[in-house]
Image 1: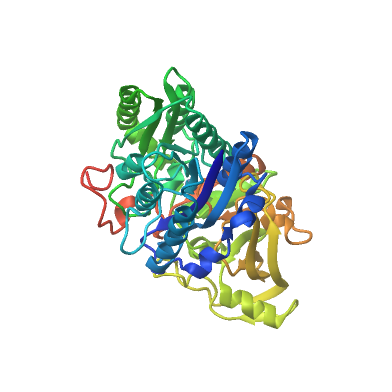
Image 2: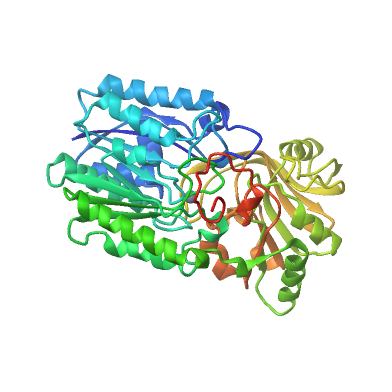
Amino acid sequence: MRIALAGFWLESVTFLPDQTGIVEFERSAKRGKDLIIGFQNTATPQGGLIDVLISEGAEVIGIVDAGVGAAASASDAAYKKYLSEIIVGLDSIKEEIDGVALHLHGALATPSNRKADAHILEAVREVVGPKIPIACAMDYHANVAPESIGAANIITGFRYSPHTDMWETGARAARLLARTIRGEIKPVMAMAKPGIALPSVFSATQLEPLSELVALAETSTGDGPLLDCSFFGGFSYADTPDTGITALAVADSDAEVAKNWVQSMAAKCWELKDQLFREDLIHDVEKGVEYALKLKQCSNKPVCILEHADRLNDSTYVLKELLKKGASKVYAPFMFDPDLADLANQAGVGARIEQPMFGKSSSRAGGAINASARVLWAGQLKFPITGPLKTGMEIDLGPSALIELQGILISVISVQWSAIDMDCFYQFEGLKPEDFDIILLRSKTHFREIYEPMCSEIVIIDTPDWGPAKLSALPYECLPKGVFPVTI
Ligand SMILES: [Zn+2]
């Protein structure tokens, strides 16, 4: 069995002013044998695909895999380049392969293409022809397009957010692909959209009643002809015609079974729609900071503040409020400001630096902080991830620094990256979570795996940034009519 493997993935925040270009994608790009070696035994969807396909006796041929976590839309040039690499690569080996394994996020968009994942799948189908099975592992935050299920044979998504089951998702896709090639199953798919756009902060799958819907996808899988069931939370900060929750099922030969399952799931989602929006968990900046400072007085553990609407890791709303209140023993990890990181590296450890800091990435980032800070550490930050997500994958955050700003400790990075695990402590000698009263994060859901047990409480603060809980604050253009709560 010979399987071609490729991937191109990005959670596109289409509202952001910039674009994610080839330079950003090339940081993670792997090709040929490097792609196989680089992802083998890693907690990633590619790792799951590769490990299981090899254990099924397949030879896996790496074409290209490139991606960025969550950032502005992909540039049209980047999309064209990686799509072309995938198609040219497949074209050259299409006579020798039995199947195609892909990892796509499902919320990829470019300025001129809001159905980019579907178009990749359609282009792959066109080049390999109708007979070669295509399996695709997608992110839980995919906005699945109907065209995608027309082009692929198998689509399955992460079940959880935090995405602790990336490997398992790749593994499920790989097993179904191998069984299809061996002629044991004939997968058919159906999908349904209830018409609900969920803010990322409410997409954490342990929140009630979302957890009930997620559990249904898992328990239905393997039920008679249902080979695989997915519940996709969708990604509301990608403005596309397909944005929102999707139920998707893969059944063995029986399209009706798949259709019935997705329709009943869509109906359940609609029934629960009001309860999915956990507004009770949200604070505004002033009250949220006040509440967090009060909480700390009665707790032995740090309090985690979540400035979740920040999509560019540099918002200053909460930081300014903490400074105003004179808070100390605060750590704000992995804040994005390449100019500041450069300046700290030039100035060196012990120096005082002064320039507008953070809050500059867009008009909604809260505005820069003008103050003087002391450099505690400066250097290049490159390491293999130790956390439960993407474990073992090497990342390079570029020139970085640890600075102290009026009693608040901040790690500054040059590449967009969210602190979700212990690496934001481990990578700086001597930093320990227990030394802080408040840890200020910008993750959406992934941090919960580590920070929920470590902190006394997660205080979610909503700000007028590009990823707010109030979706009506965003200038949607592509979202169709009838999507709750935005266009209904
Ligand atoms: Zn996701």
